[in-house]
Image (cartoon, rainbow over all chains, first blue to last red; front, side, top):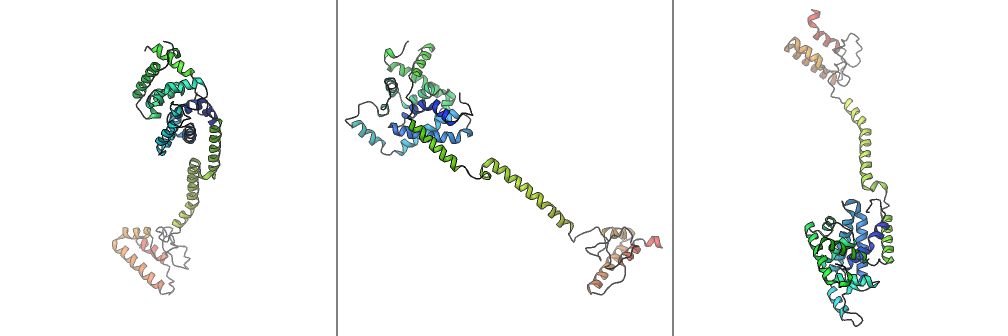
Length: 168
Length: 163
């Protein structure tokens, strides 16, 4: 699928949904997620020809952009606290807001119960279509660790999702 | 959880399609890439691969242009060893082909002449050198030397033949 001759629009259209879901878990708001996605995608497109695996680098670049923003946000914890205490905000985690439909809401609700390390792996594998080798490159973790975390995420997610959401 | 359960659950998750990003993000990406593309419209020479190739090519051409001049400087060097001495103004055609004129330094005997003198005897070589030195001094004093040194050298060289 990832043809070397694809233009940036094709890359963006194919991976945009998964990328936004991926980066959303590192940010406290949709706006920050969109900014990180923009920054990461630009970084990826400039350097895609210098890397062995463009898809792995795409997720790595977006991830780095999101983490950079999170680190730079010195008052992020304060913001989250203020946001959570706002009367107009429900008790659901901030990054779940701005869901477009019920299905997406359920998805984010399910993912919110997972640790961040498992959550990012799950998103990359299920919706991003990355292999474990690519995930290992993107997250700078051993392949075996990535596979183990992914399996653990599936088990945990299956246990937390309502019974009617999956068949066994 | 069996492998089939895993696969089924993965399929269920994949069917829960994430939301599409806002068109605003795509527009911002397009603007940023366009801005970078304009910034990258530098002169062709500065684009790294082609720039390196052109620089190397220019260096080669430059070296090729200079090379003949370097060669000419070497050819015009006054430290020439092949030609035999010749007196300025001398047009003695009897000069043996061996004693070819040394246009750069007419008084200095050639290596060939000196070698031939040495073959005769060390004393012959000494005499040749002394003679050429005397002639050099004589010429330096701006006194014209009508002696055809080339002819005399030839006589020195072929003394045996003449005797």
